[in-house]
Image (cartoon, rainbow, N blue to C red; front, top):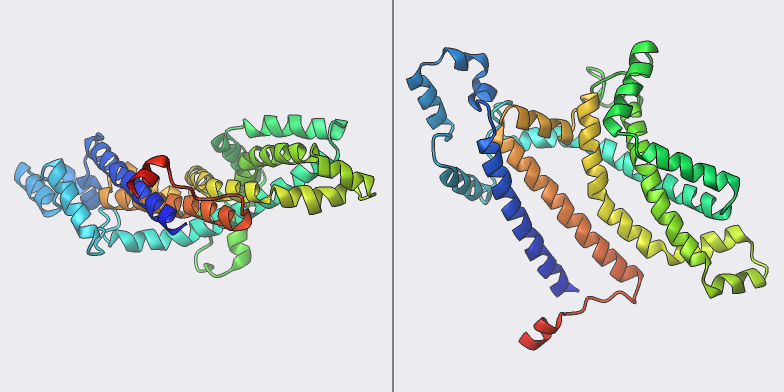
Length: 328
């Protein structure tokens, strides 16, 4: 397993490396004036000499490849550069926004999969009944509702027409440590996150459970007089648990990307909102750091899915390919 992990880390790190090159080039080629992020409207009043000096001061006058080599070499010393917009170390800005995304993402993650498992068991228990068919139809319809559109509708209803909930921010000024105040700001984003992801995972788990209920041991358990609900929870759910854990591990990045959209709609100060701001203002150092951070999250959860599945299900092995056997 250790060799498997090292191999995966090597491949995924290479992927991040090439991804960073692509993002670096695209961000440099995108239209707009990067000096606006640092100097604001003062750029419009700069002379040609002052403009060139400003580019030199920020290291933006060099060719793309030299800028990238400077950036990548500084990373190995722990220097991720200065945010052009916030005029602070990019890593400090990322960490200051990270907590809000963790709160929103983690709560969404727990609620989505907790409710998905409950809904899946409920649908399988009432399989082919009118209730099951109505839930499946409603879930499919809701799944295709765009998350940004749903967010705007919720803002219109609960923040404008009925002013009960805030439209932006993670907490009121001075109430950072007030849990209830945070939950009040998080309620609408949470609703969008749950509605956008719930049926997708409910459907997957439902199908896995339905396949499990068709197996012979289920008929044997019914013959012994065990209730349908007991069999579902204590036998079927237990047997599909490795699959569910695998889905949960892989889908962490899917839900994380969902928070990016939700944060943009609700102006929720998290990593998603920060990434859009950094792209908008050409804050190159901050944008590249967010890309690396997202790639790191992908690595962690992808490896976790493989390792946890290998520990839960002994049938899962980490075999070497024939080419690797020949080399050894």
